Length: 552
Image: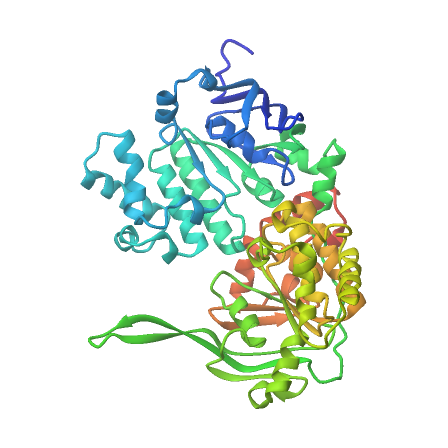
């Protein structure tokens, strides 16, 4: 390095992290981050991205240790710092935004106490001064009522708002290096765009360098300057973002790019048959906060007069921001939430007029794939028992017949031989396959898939989507596919419905919505989709087929 060349803010050289097994979890990884630069670490789950970020802060899990290499911050080896000096460095010089703000924010402590804690620990401020600094930062991250926010608890905010609060707590100390670990996972595209734009603005204003840990190549294309690709703990490729994404040298990098959803432009021929299931002016309301002298409850409509029909064998995608009513609509259509108005028709008959036997038959004919398979699968049950559970309802089966049915279903979803495993022993993609197997084992006519791939990395997402598409084509069930990921929707849907504030604002074919959006809200969703930036880049470089581009 030239004597006049400034040292990188952070220099990681030959980093090796060892766990309880013989094979290193991170094996000789190197990268540098300059002041003001955004460097992205990308790769599949298990590639070592998060471990590398935690190693910088010496926050590795128990039984995991740095066994080789150096981590230099401003030329000082962090491994040689005393615990006291390392604690002084965390937060004030190196901040970290964790993946799940609901876990990293203490649910029992008010937001104000959590924001001021770091300021009072690292800076000589009075409580009043710390509070004012917190209020100013909350305004910068676009919290509408900072004073009320300080008095509230984390559970009172949406995921996007919690991530803004987490970002505010980190940036209050003006760190020179920010480690952002999957900062927008599971956020809808509008919230994701807002959080990332705020982070980019704050870091640009303060001159903060960013280590962005993500599996979302769209975020990398939009926000990063350079990228390092990790596979199974090893660096396989690195360089400027445009170079790596448009002209990848390594097969693994190409695999990540090829895992991007590819747009489906087929035109669905509408059946002349009656709809399988139909919502007519459906309303779902929830009690709001008390107001007035007598504490009268306000009533908020989460779904407000929605009419939607799903044909047999059709895949209808419902998209929109958080709080738009997507999940509430789906749950109300299958009777998991009570409707406060309107009707749901199934095979031409109103469920309100159905007999007990007819309602039971309807329930067995409809199934739900939940967003988070880890929390929706009983951790005390084995996979075979979880998948077999729906068979306990309806016509009784002999034990041998039930075992054979479960084995055939597990083989169909690619989980042969895993019937005796528990959910915690499976990967995220495998757990989602278990959830799909459980939903389909009774051969339902209607399936609701609620954000089924939102927390999966690109390659696993691709495999789960391909599995879902194959099973839907073979079994012919109708599907309401709820998602905030427009790229995923463009691949799987026959028709798209856009919801905002509990109402349908637009619907049409994939081509109609992506190429000819009529409503401003739909255009906002498309503009916020980071994948469109990446696909446009790749399209210009000739790296992906034209059909894969979103048209945004």
